[in-house]
Structures are given as structure tokens and as C-alpha cells.
Amino acid sequence: MKKKTLLFRLAALVILAVFIPSCSSSTIKEAKVSSKTYKDPKASVEVRVKDLLSQLTVEEKAGQMLQVERNYLSSSDIKNYGLGSLLSGGGSTPRENSPEGWIDMLEGYQKQASKTPHAIPLIYGVDAVHGHNSLLGAVIFPHNIGLGAANDKELMKEIADATSEEMLSTGITWNFAPCVAVAQDPRWGRYYESLGEDPQRVSELSGPYISEMQDKYNIAVTAKHYTADGGTKWGTGYSGGIDQGNSSISDEELRKIYLPPYENAVKNGAKTIMVSFSSINDIKCHANKHLIMDILKGEMKFKGFVVSDYNGIHQIPAKSTYDKVVTAVNSGIDMFMEADYWKQTLDSIIKAVKAGDIKQDRIDDAVSRILTVKFELGLFENPLGNKQLIKNQVASDAHKETAKKAVRESLVLLKNENSILPIKNNTKVFVSGPASNSVGLQCGGWTLDWQGNKRQPVGNTILDGFKQMASQSGGEIITDPEQATKADLSVVVIGEESYAEYEGDDASLTLDSGKALSGNMSALKFAYSLNKPTVVIMVSGRPRIVTDEIDKWNAFVEAWLPGSQGDAVAEVIYGKYGFKGKLPVTWPKDSKNLPAKANNNILFPYNFGL
Ligand code: GLC
Image (cartoon, rainbow, N blue to C red; front, side, top):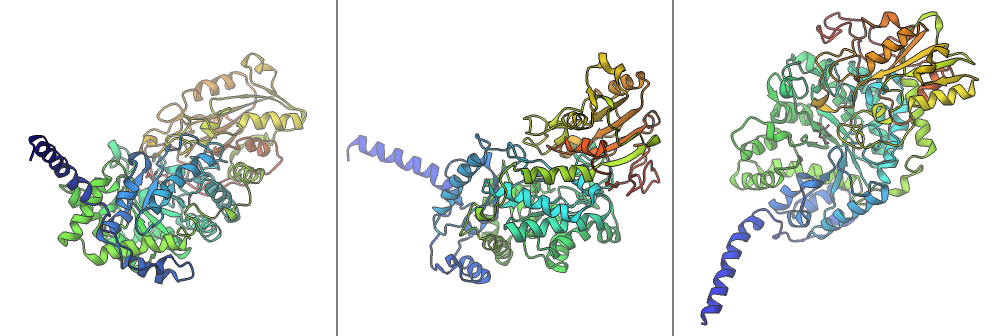
């Protein structure tokens, strides 16, 4: 044999030796189709699941258990590994952030999935937590804490409808919402994602949202974060804060406060539940087999699938990724929301099943739950959802009107000396303050970007609404401080920076520290100097400490995070609609003795509102 040929063959062998182990270890190349019954839409879900499951290799089963963040994919991963799900993390949007841009992107992913032997469609998830907030131009609704104040079950259905229609316009059929946290401590950066501190109200409002979104639009919801994410203690959380911390609770508190919203979610047919990063009595929820297998899947008979939080399993205290994965799977988690380490997680599942560290029936339980949801959603027939269900398009007037109604009903009137509100006809109003003219600040976190207020959402500001109402009532709006003395009264709109998760943890909660906007106090002081009646509106995801300032205010309105239709705030301030909102949380006097209610640290009690 010529020397040259020999060398060439040797080189080829070396290259093969290098590549085969890495790409063959967990690819689905052994997959074979032995029956097509599962493809028959007339067959029952149970029959389809059983038929499909029975012919999957362990590599295919593990692939279905992986949800990978889209930025961590390389071109042929979906096809090679038979991935079951993808997600857009906060701010992870297609180059062209339009319905067409999303559809093109998702069609590309689903096309890859259709090329696998069993052609199991992907299920794609996003956080549409206050409208389809990843989509540019989407209507952004008030965050949950404002909906807790509105306390309107019908409104929750309308919001679910609008959000579903805007999601289906982009081909997405899985929403990581509603958050059913029962928030206790306003220092928590996720306080605004909660419908309030009362588990009953959290259940009553999340239930209609869940059943509307799933039953009318075939979009899977996610009740999150299981559980007691809202009960953590300051100092036990991420970098010494409170988010992802530890809830030291009795079994009675667990069952009275933190389980009921999940019992309610399961009763309403929630198809997925997301596990909390946090711990209960120092056990990570992601490693808590009793909580997931015994209580959720056992007692509550949850039939959907359990998904981990983002890279959440890597926080499990164990010496290797393999051990973390084995612990997480055996604790009852069915799907793994992964980014950086998704391939190690996939390999670990396959290795652990082959080694017997994970039992076959645990894997089959996980995969049958995942496949059941995919068949129930009709993904094998409509991988991008059923667009026939869309009645109103993205940013339609109908969706905007729903959002304006939510804004109006969420406002809480906490003080109104001499009935200074509503503002009378022909009034000259000086409007100031750092949150008076910013759609980004009105929307807060989880809006286009994870932390919000970066790319500006489409919408109307509170100031826009004041100008609108003044023109309808013969009044005048003044924004130039030089002209302020001409005004009859002063309105100051103060607020918070936008934030999400642990970035929003705030130890102090005063008006000029932590996540408070830097312009709050200067705007207030200037208004005080005018010696005119002063109305304060606060745009915030939670109560802040107003005890030392509120005596200087003639009226005080909490607007929470109203979203893109902030102009609706003025419709209530000018009396076109009455105040309806009631506090969904206790408003503390100070930020030392928290949670407020438990420490009798109360400026305004739960359910207060004039
Ligand atoms: C985040 C949040 C969770 C969200 C997920 C995907 O870390 O904890 O609420 O659904 O990751 O963005």
C-alpha cells in the first residue's frame, strides 16, 4: 500500500476516533419507528402516548426531558439530540422582533424536530407574565400585584385571552405564568409577580387565568414557583438578599399558605408546574422528593409535568453534575430548563438510566407526562398552535381596552384630604416626577428585557393621559417648572427603577435608596416649595416606606406597575372612573420589622383602599 494512502487512512481513523464518542454518546441515531399509531389524531391521548413511548430509545427519552435556552443551541442540536423543548429566557428575542420574526424562528426549530425519526414537535416556552412582554409592540398589562389590587376574576380571563392571542400570533404555546407566589416581604425583587399575601385571593385570581388560557387557547400554563418562593427570609437569598432564599416554615404554614394556590392550579388543570430556586427548611425545592413526588404528584394527583427553573438543578448541593441530575430526576422533576450545561445534563440522564441510578419507570413517568401535554395541546397537528383561535391581533384596540380597564381597577387611593381627587374641570395641573413620562418604568421588569426599561416598549405614559383628560375637561397641564406657580395643584409621579428577581431585592425600601428612582425626593421637595395641594402617584412593584413624607401629601395613589397603557391612570384621577383597587398586601410603616402583618408594622392594612 502506498505510504501516502496509509497516512491518509491513519489520519481518517484518528479524526473518527476523536469525533464519534462526543457525538454518539447521546445522539438519537439508534431511533427506529416501529408503529405510527401515535400520529393518528383520532386515537386517544393515552393510546398515542403509550404507542410512542414504547418505541423510544433512552436517548430519545432523555432528549424529550431537556428544555434548552435558544442562545445555547448550535445548528443541528435539535435534530441530533431530539430535544423536547426550547425557551426564550428574559430578553431572548429573534433578530426581527415581530410576529413574523417569531414565526420564522419557531418554524425553523420545528422543522428540525420534524426531521427526527419520530418527529416529535418541540414545545416552546416564554415568560408572558404581563402580556406577551417579549414581543415588541405587545400590549403590556399591569404586573400581578396590580391585578391583585383590582381583584377581578373576569378581568383575569380577559387578560388571559389577550395574552393568549398575542402569543399565538407568534406561534408560542407554553407560558411560564401565572406566578402564584404568596409574597410576604416587600424587600423581595419578585414581590410584584405575586397576586398578594393572601393565598385565597392568589388562588381566586390565578384559577380563571389558567383555565381560560388552557381551555380556550390550548396554551400550557406554568404555576410557579413551587413552592414557598414568597416566604423566604431576608439574608438567606442570592448574594445575601432574599430571592432564592430559605423559607423556615412549619408543615401547617406550608399547607395553609403555600400549597393552596397549587391545589387550585391542579384543580384548574394546570399542565406544568415550575420548581422554585428557593429552599424550605434548608432543603432545595429542586431536591425535595417529598414536596414533588409525595405531595404534588401523590396527594394532589398532578398529571402534568414538573419543570425545573433556569439552571436550577445546578444549585443542588452535590459533588458532580451527574449527582445533581440524578437527585433532581429522582426528586420528581420531569423537564430540565437548561442553558450552559444542557449537554452534560442530557449525558448524565442517559448514563444514570444505563447505570440504574435512575429507574426506567421514573424516566417513563417523566416522558409520558411531557408527551401527554404535547398531544393535549395538539402540537403534533399544529406545532405553532392554532391560529384559528385568534380573534384580536397584537396591540388591537380590544387588547388595549382590557389593559386600560386593568390599570383603572388596580389603582389604590390611600389618602384624599378634602376630596382633592378627582381633579375638577378647568384645573391647571403641574405634573412632575421621574415616573411621569416613561413607558419603560411603567412596565417594570420582564419587559422586552429581563430587567426591563432598556428597549422601550410601545405605549402611552401617565403624562399622556393627563394631557388627554385636561383637554377634555377644560384644564391645562404644566410641565415646565418655571411655569409651575401658575398651577392650581401639583401632581408628582415617583417610583422605582425596573428590576426582576434578585436584582430587585431592596433592604431599605425608602423613597431615596435601593431601587427608588433618584429623582423622587427632588421632585417632591420642589412640589412642596410651591405651597399648592400635592397629589402623589407612585409607580412601584411594592409598597415603599412613605411614613415620613405622606403628611405633606394631600392625596396619595399607588399605581403599581401599570404597563403600556399608563394613560388610563388619569381617567381615574380626573373622575371618569371611580377608584376600585384595594391593597393586596399590608403596607408597612418601616422596613425593619418585616413581614409587616406578622410584625404589626402597619401603615395601611391589607384590603385598604378609599
Ligand atoms: C427565571 C425565573 C422563572 C422564569 C425562568 C425562564 O430564572 O425564575 O420565573 O420562568 O427563569 O425565564
